Picture (cartoon, rainbow, N blue to C red):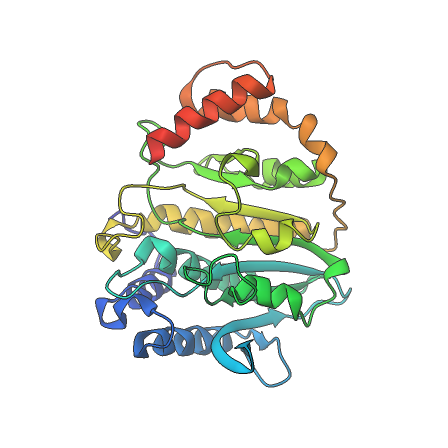
Length: 321
C-alpha cells in the first residue's frame, strides 16, 4: 500500500478502509454490511455539505415488480444554471470479497472530490451518485442501479454536461513503467471532452484516452452511453485481484487515489457550465488521440489506423487480465 503525504488525505484513507472492511462482508445487497455502507455514504455526503438529491432524502429505492431490491445513494451541490456534472461509482459487491478496489476506492475518491470542491460556487450542479446493484445478477438489467437512475432520473438529462463514472481506480496498472496510468474512455464521442481531459491531466497522473469499444460497457457508464449522454469512464483496468477475496485494502495505492481525486475535481471545474455535444462520428478523428495514448503506454509508435490500434488494444488488455 502506498500512503498519503497530506493530513487531509487521511479521510480518503479512512473511507476506503471502512468500506472495504471484512466486517462489511463485501457489501452484498441485502446484507448488514451493504446497509452499513449505504449509511456511511449518506452520512459522509451530509458531513461534506452535500444536499440530498431526492425529495425524501439521499436514497432512491430501486423497485422490481413493486418490491424494493436496492437503493441508490445520491446527493448534489447546487449550482445556478440547471446544468449538471455527475460523479458516479457503484457501492455493492459480493459476499466474502472485501471489494477494496472494486469499488471502495472509487467511493472514497468521489467523497474526496466533494471535499475538494466545497464550498461549491459553480454554475452547474455537481451530483454525487453511488449506484447499487452493479454486480451480477443485476448487471446490465433494468434494476442495475445506474440503469434505474437514468430511467427514473430527477435531473434534466438534457442539461447533463458529463457523467464521470469510476470503477477499479485504486490499484497500480500491472504494466511495468505504467503503474500510475489512469485509463479514460468516452472522450471519443466529443472533441470538447478530449480537450477537457488533456487540460486536467497532471504530470503525476497520466490520463490515457482510448475508445470504450475496447472494453465494452463493463460498468455504470453504459446507462449514459446507450442514451446518447456525455460520459467519461475512469479506470485502472483489470488486475489479478478482480472479483477475488484478495482485493483488500492493503493493496490500494492511496497516493494514486488522491491524484485521481484531484484530476476528477479539475474535470468538474472545467466542465462547469459547459454544453457537451455527443456525436458517435467523432470517434473517427479520435484515432490520432488513441495512437498517442498507446505510444505513451508502451513506448511504440502505432499509426492512427483502426485495425492496428485494435490489435494493440487487445495485446494491452491481455497484459491486464
